[in-house]
Length: 283
Length: 224
Image 1 (cartoon, each protein chain N blue to C red):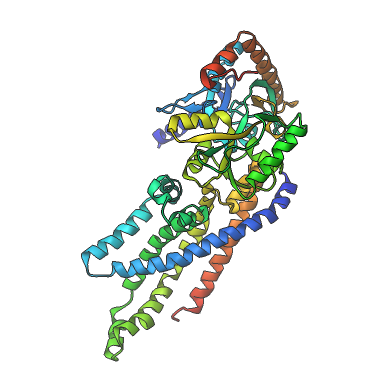
Image 2: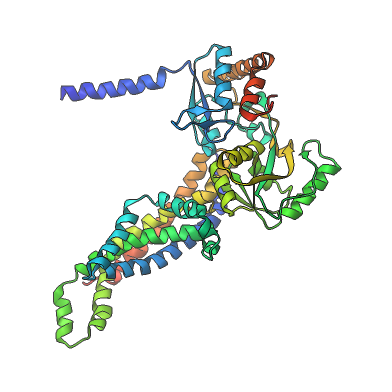
């Protein structure tokens, strides 16, 4: 009986310690399934641009960090429930998300694009190379009109809770048949199987998949930025408040902003971006 | 707690409940036939037929439903040969993939439920039929099947409820059932607790209806 009591106490104490002992380390949440932003190697370790950048930023802040994995569709809820303190998961800064959380300044940016399988009827659309929805103008309107016509009645696949889903839901390209998936991997699988007529995601997500799988995935139409696509990718942090945790969050935001400034000046972000994206996606 | 969000999500989730009910009723209907078919095979004296039926129920009861859906939806979609065959018309649609997976799963459980129900029928009842000169076929349809159905009602009621909850996995293959729509609402509001409470409430209400329906049928067809 006594042994049982000691055993029980031991479990309780260790549980308590595991909750409280890490009060000073910064926990950073990432998805681990969106290469080249973040992904996992064969043995399950988190790798990618943001994992390396997170370590660099933490070194600049002289803070101890742990990077934890979280499914994309639960990313913001998990941040709000304090499972971690910051998000670095290729998450674009959008007005929609800023209603709920706050972002550091952007550290990298890249464009979104539609992808199809080679031989699709959607190939060869007559649109400009890239459109910025924030700037607008005649070219953008014309391109959106071309896309609306081409995508009418087509099934377009996206990862759930992404800027890409928001864009298709916004009605800018009319009423398309949107299918949402839990991960980008699943989007890629169904694009390759032919269940999706097209898919929308970060352009690099498709080129990365095409390269690794050898499947004939090609980008079509213009590249997208601005508007529903947000203003670059930043660190997601809880909105600060007056209590102790709120103050800590507000300080964390300042620290991240400073660290990003420094890393940018030292060329760390550009260097990492070129290494992982093949071009300088830093901002 | 955001009560406005909870109230606003009710109509959307109720709409989605229709998809859930469609998936459930289609797979239960097909599953009942599959289950009855394999239950009869299980009682066959030929060892190969018997083992085949046993193997089917062993595999589908021994693997998670989620894995079965993934194999049928994402797995079969990888096979080039299937994609160019006429089967692709059906397998292309997530809706039919889900129904196929649910049917095969519930069919396996139903075959076990029916088999045990058949085996509990007292031999005396069948012998009584035979002594009255009733043909084997009529004994099967008029004596064995009605008794077996009555015997299996409680267990089958459980299976219906399990299957109803199982349909929530349809959302993993892009279907917008209750869980799918709940996830969609969460993807724009970032408030999982409120939305999942409402979704859970709807599932609970459906369980309540199924439970009472089965109870009513049990009473109606009781032997007393």
